[in-house]
Length: 93
Image: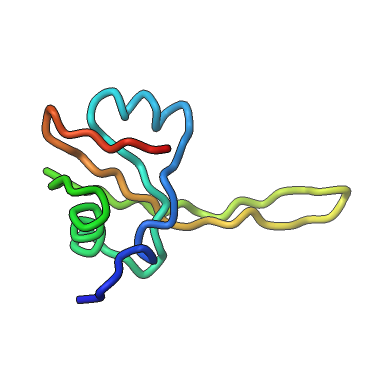
């Protein structure tokens, strides 16, 4: 078990969909590609002092984009949806 979990949770994912889920005590994070549900659960406990009820992991695929006539890719990654019980909150500053 690592001493620090700051490398597991990269950043909170602040989007319109994530904001609507936040009202239902579901918080979305971008996570490292090698992380799993157990690591995300431990990281949320350590960094935010709340115990998740459930964690869902989603792999975000890469997308092809055209920029100034050249083809490129938009990086994918992994995100985690963390479900908390009623009354628990995570404050993002």
